Every structure is written in C-alpha cells, then in structure tokens.
Image (tube, rainbow over all chains, first blue to last red; front, side, top):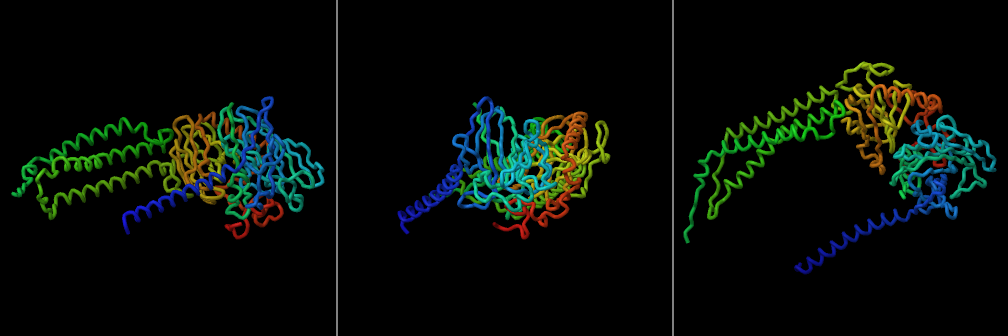
Length: 241
Length: 324
C-alpha cells in the first residue's frame, strides 16, 4: 500500500472515530436538552409549584413507567418533565396530585415529613366520583406501612427535604386508578397534598427523587423510572436573583 | 582511520560507593524530616478521630519508609547518567558481570526486611486501632475497648452504637440506645467510642466518613462493624464510595461531632419528636440487618402482599431481576 493510500485510510478511520464520538455526544446531550424546564416566578415572595404523579405516562418509549408531571404556571398545561426552577430564598408552596396507587417504603423512616415549614403536609383524598373522603388533614407522618397510604415520595436530600406523597386508598388503588396521562381529577381517585419550604438562599441545582422503590420490573425496584430524569428523578434549579 | 578503544578504569577507581551513600544519606534524611515535620500534619484524612490520626500516622510512616528507596533509585539513575555515561569516541562494551554475591545478598536481605517491616507494621496498626476504621464484618476481630449498654448518657464510657443505613441514594442513621430513633444527620459525641453498624436496604454501598477515617461496605442484610472515637468537634462529610447506580455521585450528606451534652440533648429531642408524631412506632424493631422485603406491620413478605402496591406492581416481583 502506498504512503498516500495509508494516509487516506488513517484519515478515514480518524474521521469515523471522531464522527462516532460526536454522534454519541450529540445523541445524549440532545436527549437531555429535549427535556423541558418549567420556570416558576415568585409573586409576593412566594412561588406555587404544582406536580402530579401518575401510574403511567404519555411518552412513546416508556409509557408504562410511573412518572411525575410539572404544571406550567403560564398556560396550566401538564408538562412531562421533572425539571423546574424556582427563585432563591423564596417560600415555595408545593401541591402534588397523587394519582398512583400505594407502595410500601423500603425504609419507613421516610414516612416522616421532614424539611417542610412546620414539618407537616396537608392531605386531601378523593374517590373517582370526586367525593372528598379525607379533608385537609395536616400530619407529620404518612405511615407507608400501616395501610395503603403513600404512593411515592418527593425528596430533595441536598436540602434535607423528605415528603411522603399520599395515594388513593387500598380499594381505589387496586381497581380504579387513572389510566391515561396526564391524569385529571374527573373520574379518577387521587390525593392532593400541599406543603411549603424555603428555597436555599443561594442558587444551585438540587436533585430530587422518589424513595419508594416504584421501578417495577427492575432490580430492587430502583431502576428504570426511579433513576431517570423526566420520570421519578428530577432536578430543581434554584435561581439566585 | 585509526580506531581508539578507551577503557573506564579511572572512573572505576573513584569511591563511587561511599560517594553515593553519602549523597543518599543526606537526601534521604532531608526528605524524611520534611515528610515527618512539614507534610504529616496536612496528610489525609486529618486528625479528627483516633482512626483518622492513625491513618495519618500510617501514611507518614510509609512515606518515610518509601522515600529513601525512591531517592536511592533516582540517585543511582542520575549518577549513572552523569558519571558512567559513554564519552565521545567510547565505542567499547561495558564490563561483563557474572554475579556479585555482595550485591545479591544485600538485595535479598534489604527487600526481605522492607516487606517484613510493612507486614508487621500494618498488622500492628490494624490490631492496635480496632481495624483502623475499616469495616470488619459482623464479628470484628479487633474490637474497640468500651462499655456496652442498652442506654447512653453523657459523661460515661459507654460505647455509642450507630446503625448506618444506605439506600439508593441517601444515608440514614439509627440510634438503638435512643429508642431506635433514626435521622438523616450523623451526629456523634466527642471523646466517645463509637461502633458503626453499616448495612444497606438495596444494593452495595460504602459508608465513607472521610474526616473520621471510617470506611465500611454497606451490604444488604449484613452488619458490617467499624469503630472510631472522635477527638475534635467539627463537620464530617459522608459519601458513598461504592458505585451504586447512576446517582451514586449525589449520595452524600454531612455529619457533626458535638459535645457529649449537646449530643445527648439532640438525641433525646429527636427521640421525643419521633415518639410524639408516631414515627418510632412505625419503624421496624431495631435489628442489626434488615430484609426489606419483610414488613413486620404488614405481617408478610412484601411479594405476598398483593393489592397494596402501586400500578407498577410489587417492588420485588417474583423472578427479580428481570427486564421490563
């Protein structure tokens, strides 16, 4: 093989390797950037964040994964993402609609509400007919082992914030759960939970996750949706002014 | 053309051995003094606990042991290049060497002494410091001296038991001498022997309390014991040092070493709060290791408890692990 041919072969191989690397990087980076971030702005020193957790989702690739949704404060539509931003040093009022059924915690310690203002949450539960069978109950523990009580958790370990999220009761969890996402209150049993916390004084990205092993079908229940951004794993971007 | 063959006889006559030894002795002494007095106080992991101090001491001793060897190698290398290099016009071969009993004996004796020294020193340090902060399994060979008791109060010599529980991707800490209360914060009293009981609820993690010099694997259903005694007040960084999943890098939090009275107040306060809000009653009875598929309050192993799990089904499906 001539020197020119060898040089050409080397060049082609080099371009192929570099091209493959760029493709892989763009594929993953592009995939990550495709996940939208919902931005919440403060009003009167407070910001209202609204989430829901569903037994399934409306994605094309993993429709059977449990998933969170974030409500866009502008139009009110539900966005299939787990990325949202809040201002720093602001009271964050969170509302979570729990449409998924109950699952026991691996460590029942996380039945305790920690890191919210007052270390409590307020829970209301509704059946599929819209009847409110638990009305505005404020509690510091939602015991995930006592009955069918908790569906998931909303936990930001970096802020020491651990919140069990209530679910519809056992009978409703077994038979009548919402089957089309994003879920709506009409015709579906759900729990509505509210709590507040102060966002950190300085900016930064805070990982949040579910601590109930709800990744059904995966080893120890922690694979799949449990570790994937856009499903049960998310990030809260705290933006300093 | 005339070819001239030169020999290196004049160089061989120089007192190379004594010269090398003299230079080596000075450099080695300087290096060891610098390591011991200037570097040692800054070596990781610091001196916050007995185990950390011993690790700092061990690293310094090993550095002091290694420095003369490294210096000898580098010195001999440099000396050879400078003194025994081929001069211009020197095309002759080196002197053939068929064996040197003195060199061989020195080499064998020297390396044997070094290896034996490392073996004895390492064993003594492990034994003398109750495992040097490493996990020793459920039945430690080297135990830390201390009084064991079902309760703990400030001012005594009672060992504090702390159960370290790892799960993807956070740590919690349980204190059996305070009613089995649990916390996301690692709080420890100063000047108190501590026995960590490290376990996991899912995959293998590794509890690494850096400033304390404690590192122990967290295996599911295994009680891995590690000891330490904190000697100064301050903060501790707790990390997972075993790749445990995609968010392994985010699995860290912080702990604090406080005075014994402050610790007693904190622990009693947490215990009282968890009793009041019902959490203590909701926790499983304290055990040195848990099978997370068994939930005492539900009275059955989890996979047998149908109808209480979420839409995704059991979190331990029969036949796990499987792919969806």
